[in-house]
Length: 509
Image 1 (cartoon, rainbow, N blue to C red):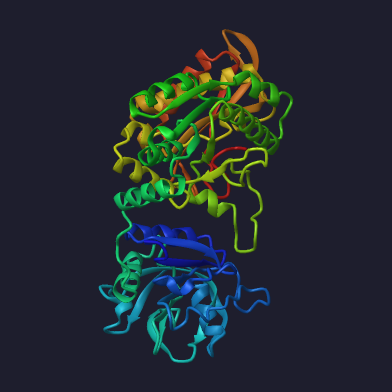
Image 2 (image 1 turned 180 degrees about the vertical axis):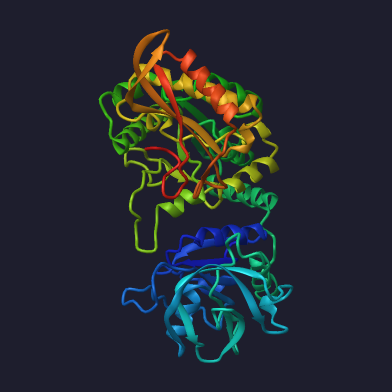
């Protein structure tokens, strides 16, 4: 199943969407930067070139060597990719007279073309480019046009190379999935074998071969990723997996005990370690978000190392790293600008002489859930909202104190329990409360108060790469606000965050 489809990333915001659409067709694919083409590229069954924020006419435009791909592996070039093939191979790309962005309709489709099988004229597509292809490259054959774009799609005579100026991966291209299926299944003859069951079978076999009889230690968080990783490893190596669940003092209210209870019936070897005081002491006086993240990461590794030393002859450290973590940690121009440190990416300190195993590193979040369901993991556990690795530390803006943690735990508990009671929890991808570093004037019982403000946050998303705020019912927000202010001493004002990602992030820090 490896080396099925290669996606070369030119920096487009939509590249991950291409991967998601391909995987929805039960086809395995990988994203690689355009300047790091795998040496064995000819072993891939198909290659897709992504869009890009660059113009092919710029001197610093991405310029990959496609000599091992063109004419040898079926190729689909999307947007920038289509313009790249034209510009550097005998065609002409010029600035559009008007910026071509948004919905358009295919006004002409060439008859009996495999790429457009089962796609009819007037099909809606999504454009996102400021250049346009004025003349096709050598041996180019026009396949489709829109009212404003003459060369909306073309192919190269004599080779399995196709190019489109629109984005089939976005929701607004109504037949985009059909086009991708036409290219991958009917043209490139890729088999649709990428299923949760196949992933479990292949991964368990690979883990058995890689680990053998060695011992593995895994840091459980109670979240979906680490739980699915644990069950996969347990299938492969059984009792040689040692799970450690660390209480960093920044978990949700009662979460340490409730998560340990959830794991009791899963056959896993789990040890709970309460290191709350150690983490809170290390965080004292630190208010910078990145410093807080790094402090928590450092102390976690110290605690984890202490626990690992209590076990004899452990050789591997398992992590629940997933594909978005990996992608966000690289870019087409080398290491990406750090938006925030990923707790699972970046390796281990030298003093931990352990090899890393990451069974989920090529899966998106929704794929992790499907794999978990395939292995029979409790739906309630699989449906848990994502929770940040640093916990409530990055939902307390400013420095951390035990009192602030207590306040936020109470607020968060009321909010999350309210979502469950109102049957809203499963309609939300992630939710939480943020303790703001400001005080607000209020009135309680005819007395003036000057207490904390909390912000509630609830978003809907597929994998956290983009997210929209959830339009929660006013009656619900009113009830939760009143409950928080009446029950949580120290809070006198509640606000609701209606920012989407981008431009905001899901977390505030």
